[in-house]
Amino acid sequence: MRERNYGFLLSNLILRDFRIRYRNMSLGVFWSLLNPLIMMSVLTFIFTRIYRNSDIPHFHVFALCGIIPFNFFALAWISGTISIYSNGNLVKRVLFPREIVPIATVLANCIHFLIQVALLLVVVLLAGYAINPYWLLLPVVMAFEVIFVCGLSLASSALDVYFRDVRYVVESANTLLFWLVPIFYSFSQIPSQFRSLYQYNPIAAVVLASRHILLEAKAPPSTLLWKLALVSFASLLAGLWIFGRLKRKFSDYL
Amino acid sequence: MTMTIVRLENVSKIYSRKTGRQFFRSFLAHKLKRRQEHFYALRQISLRLEEGDSLAVVGPNGAGKSTLLSVIAGLCWPEEGIVEANGRVAALLELGSGFHPDLTGAENVRMNAALLGMSRRATTEKFDEIVEFSGIGEFIDEPLRTYSSGMIMRLAFSVAMNVDPEILLIDEVLAVGDQAYQVKCMEKILELKQRGKVLICTSHDAEMLKRLCSRALWLHQGCVVDKGPLNEILDAYEAWSAASKPQPD
Image (cartoon, rainbow over the protein chains, first blue to last red):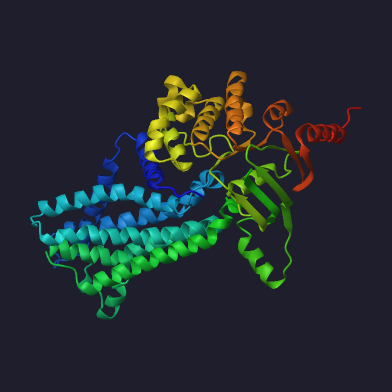
C-alpha cells in the first residue's frame, strides 16, 4: 500500500459531520450557544436560590466553567461511540484506516466546543474577570481533554460494533459523570480523602484547571496537569490498542 | 516480464453463525464446549492475476462473489489463507457506498476521492474531469438524495476511474447505467486494461462480461466449480443454470 496523506480525508469527514448537522437547521450554530446558557441558568437558579451556595462568587461563571468541558465530553464520547456503527456502509465498502472514523467524529464535536469556549470567555469577561497570561494554558488543557475522548471513543466505538449495548453503558456513564465532575460544587467542598482521586478524572481535572486559570488567575497545580496528561495519553494508547485488536472483524458484524 | 498483481492462496472466509446479541453466549459456548456452527462463505480459493488480466466471477446468489471481492479489496479478513494485492484498489461494491444523501454531488465527489486516497490537490485538479465524465452537469450542486440510482452510479464510477487504480473491482453496479453510459464505462475500463490494470467484476449480464473479461471463475456455495477462459465457463454455467431452473409443467 502506498504512503498516503490522510489529512484531506480527515478534514472531509469533519466537514461532512458539520454540514449534515447544520444544513437542515434554521438556527444553526446558535444551538451550540443556547444549550450551555440554559443549563447555566437552571443550575444557577437551583444553587443560588434553592440550595444556597453563598461562598462561591459569580456562580453562573463558575457553573459554566464546568458545563462546557463536560458537555463536550459527553457529546463527543457518545457520538464517537456509535461512529463506526453509523458509518457501517463506509467501513464495510471502502478501505481506509478505520481509526479515522471515531477521531473525525470527536474532532467534529470540537468545532462546537470551540464556539462554546468562546462563549465562556465572553461570559468570564462580562463578569469582570481580566485576561491573564495563564489563558495560554487553556488550549493545552483542552487538547488533553480531546486526546482523552479520542482514546475512549476508539475503544468504545470498536466494542460497540460487537456489543450494541456499549452505547447505553456510555449514556449511563455520562449521566453519572455529571454528578461526579465538580460542575456545580467546588474542589474544596469535596472531602479531602477523595480529592486526589478526583484529579485522575480528566474531565474533573479540565474543569478544575479552567477555574484556576479563568477565575483565580493562577496556574493550575502541576500535579493536576501531570495527572491529566498521564491519563489522557494512557487512554489514547489503550484506545488505539483495543481498536487495533478489534478492527479486523468489523465488516463481519456491521 | 509480467507482475503478479493479485494473489490468493487457499483463502477461506468463515462466518460463525451468531448474531451480535448472542455473541457473548456463543463466546462462552466456544470456550466451554467448542461446539459452534460455521458457515464457509469462501472455501479454499486460490487465484493469481497478472497485469492486464480481467476476471469475471459468476455464480448464483449467495455463491460468495461479493465476499470474494471484499476479501481482495482488503475489506474483510479471511480466516485462512493469504491475500496479496499490489497496488491501489478501487472497489465499486455497492451503489453509493461512501456517499451521503444530504451532501451535494460536488461534496460527495471530494469526500469519495478522499476516501479512495486522493490528496486535496489531486482532487482539485481532477474535479472538473470527474464531473465532466459523470455527465451530471448542473445537478452537481444538488443534494445526492435527489439523484436517480443511475446518476449515483455515474458519479461513483467517475471518481473511481480518476483515482487511477491498479486494481478495479466492480460488483454488479454498472447494470443501473443507461445504454449510452454503459458503453462509455466499458471503453474506459478497456482502456485501463490496456494499460496493464487488473479488473475483477461480477455480473449476471453475460454480454457485458464477454466484452470486458477474458477469464472467468465460477463459484457455488463458496467453492470454485471451475475456472478458465470466459466463454467456456459461461457456457457451462449457463447450461447448469438452465438445468437447475424449476421446469414449467
